[in-house]
Image (cartoon, rainbow, N blue to C red; front, side, top):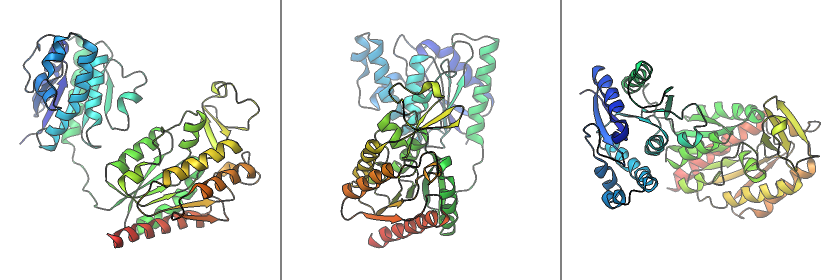
Length: 407
C-alpha cells in the first residue's frame, strides 16, 4: 500500500493551495488525508477529517467556540486539538507524514500539531514566516520549515513552483529508506567547544560497552532537545558533562535552555553523570550586545560573534545550589563529578577565566547543598584530561548496571 500523507491546514482560507499540494502528492504515488483546522467559513475543498472531528479528538465541542466569533480563541482551540488528532492518526498507522501551508495562524496550529510527533516522523510546513526567527515554532522537534516566498494566497507561477517542491520534499521524506536500527541503548551527552576533549575521551568507552552516544551542543536549543529526548523514554543514560546553559539562564546569557534544564533525568528515572562543565561562562553575542551592568567583568572574545563572560563568586554559589537542587530530585543512580583544576579550557591555571575563588564557591555550594546519599567525586585534574572523561564514562556504565540489577 502506498504511504499516506496528512495535509493539515486552514481549508477555509487556503483550501485551494492545500488541494494543489494534495494533487502533487497523489501524482507522485502517495495517498492524502485532508484535515481541516480552519476556524472561519466553510472549507473551500472537501476534508477527510473535519474541524469538528479535530476538536473532538481533544474532547472539545467546537461549535460554541465558533459561535463566539473570537478568532484568537478559535485558533487557540485548534492549537490544543491538532496535536491530538495527528498523534492518534500516527499511532493508529493511518498517516506516514504530514505537510501544512500557513501564514501566522496556520503556522501556529500546524507547528503545535507537529511538535507533538516523534523525532523522525516526516513533517513539513510551508510558511510566510519561515525566513524569520522560527525557534518558537520548531521547538525541539525536527520540523522542516520552507519559505513560501510569496503569500499563500492563490496559485501563481511562484507559488506553484514552491508548493510543487514542497510536495516532492514530503514525498521523498516519506519514501526514503531508513538505515536499520542498531538496537543499541542510547546515551546522551552534552558538549561545548570547551569540553569537546572530555566527551571525546568518554565516547569510545561507552561505545565499546555497547552504547550509542548522541552528543548535543549546549547551546540552549541543544539542551532543550536533549532533555526532550530523555523525557521520551528512549535514553538509557545521561552524560551531562556541559551544564553551562544553567549559567545563561541565571545571569541572562543567550544560550539558556530554560529553567527546566537538568530535570528530565529525574522525571525519566535515568542514571546520570553530572559535571559542572563550563559553568565558568555566560554567553553573549558580539561585544556590543553585552547588556549594561556588566562593566568591569572578565570577558573572553571567543570569536567575533561570541563573547564569554566569567561567572563571579556569587553567581557560582547560586549555580552550585541550582545543580544540587536538580540532582536532589533524581531517583535513579547518579553521580556528580568535579574536576577541581578547571571546568573548561579557559578556566585552567593561567587561562583567562582562571578564578579559584569562584570555582571554590561553585564546588562548595554543590557539596553543601547535595542530598547526603548522592555520590560526589572530586578529581584533582582538568575537565579535558583524558582520565577524567574516561572516569565519567566508566562511572555511568556502573550506574546503569546498578539500576538494571536493582530492577
